[in-house]
Amino acid sequence: MSSRTVLSGSDIDRAVTRIAHEIVESNQGTSNLVLLGIPTRGVMLAERIAAVLERSYPDFDAAKALGRLDITMFRDDLSTNPTREITETLIPAGGVADKVVVLVDDVLFSGRTIRAALDALGEFGRPRAVRLAVLVDRGHRELPIRADFVGKNLPTSVAERIRVQLSETDNDNSVVIEG
Amino acid sequence: MKHLLSAGDLNLEKAITILDTAIQMEQVNSRDIKKLPTLRGKTVVNLFFEDSTRTRTSFEIAAKRLSADVINFSAKGSSVSKGESLKDTAQTLEAMGANGVIIRHPASGAATTLASSGWIDSAIVNAGDGTHEHPTQALLDAYTIRQKLRGNEPGSDLAGLKVAIVGDIAHSRVARSNLLLLKTLGAEVYLVAPATLLPAALASQAKAHFYSLDQAISEVDFDAIMMLRVQSERMTASFFPSEREYARIWGLNGDRLAKLNPKTIVMHPGPMNRGLEIDAKAADSQNSVILAQVANGVSVRMAVLYHLLAGGSEIE
Image 1 (cartoon, chains in turn cyan, green):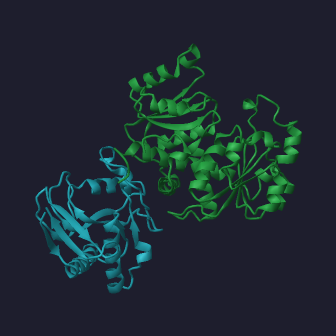
Image 2 (cartoon, each protein chain N blue to C red; image 1 turned 120 degrees about the vertical axis):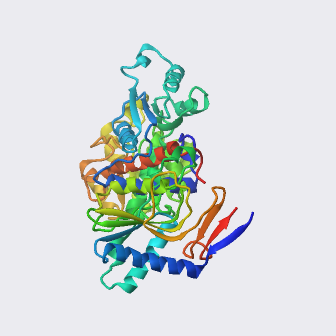
Image 3 (tube, each protein chain N blue to C red; image 1 turned 180 degrees about the vertical axis):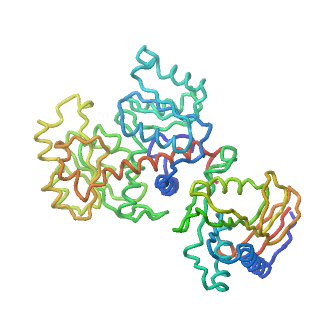
């Protein structure tokens, strides 16, 4: 099995910084923003984006804008896979109603995770808009879903595997293609 | 995990996984919309051959909150009263495509029979079989203890906590399941009962046992005290002289409550015989977590149904 590094740690940092600024640009400021990370690595990416925003925009308060959204119980492939563990969902105290919610995930592939996330999000209220930020878009969508903010577009074959490693849970910061 | 038949089926890791899942389910239960699509299209049958209010409704609410279809089947008013056997009932449910069967039965071992007989392919949950086991009650008791005494910390066990189980232990499936599960989770379990209601085989598995509640309270600083219901319907002999004497010697009343550590939690699996094993002062006191047990029952049963029915196979 061959493996090839496509993003290094500093590439990831630059992509995260750029995504953070693109989010503010498209939102015309940081007001009403809610960042929701999708476990596992989407949560860490959302934290990194929030850290960039806190550094660059004094009126951005991560404590009021950062959360996490577990989508396990909304998946459409539960019965064909081994039971998954459910993790915590944390919605910022201000809720999501009338907010601009940015979902953050590591890899966008079939789009089914995001479909589940949209359903999960609906339980908490009606956002003014929902955006999607991903570190890697590898194509092969099975649903009409696209990302608004993309770290890197990575054409792959379906057989290949994308492995995102972030230092919060892994030993390394990198994106590797295997297969 | 295909079935949940005994609290002994759960090792430490599995038990903690279920308790941690229940924390997330509790969060769902505090939302405005208490509904998840997780078990959509699955059918859960409540097969109750014995009377029950809280266990049956708790399982029904749990299954419905996960969007499963629920069929309630009680022995009264069904073909069982025409003499249908458990085997035929099970095969009927199998033919109708039940994914999960929650069974309560007066015969010990009924759930295991259903799971191992090959009559039915569904997941089986034991909701009480005779005087044998009631594993989801033990799980909700462990969850309540962890919630009240360990701050509901995910991943935590009950190591070092002292739990007394008091009363009709001989007839109690709750006591048997709790003894197994609480020990798995690292708690020290003490059994307190009249000698006639404390089988030696169980007493030997406990940290210690007492034949007097007053002695137990004076010798051990309990973190939790669990009063069992006196099961008059299973009492075929004279196990104690009279109900008044039982209440006086083994009942938890205001005087005994005052002797407990103020932080000790008082538990009861319900339904309570007020004035017998527990009096109103103890049941309605600050120490009582009896209603929390009922509320937690729904979250814990959602977690059990999730682990048995949602996935295709074991946790990765």
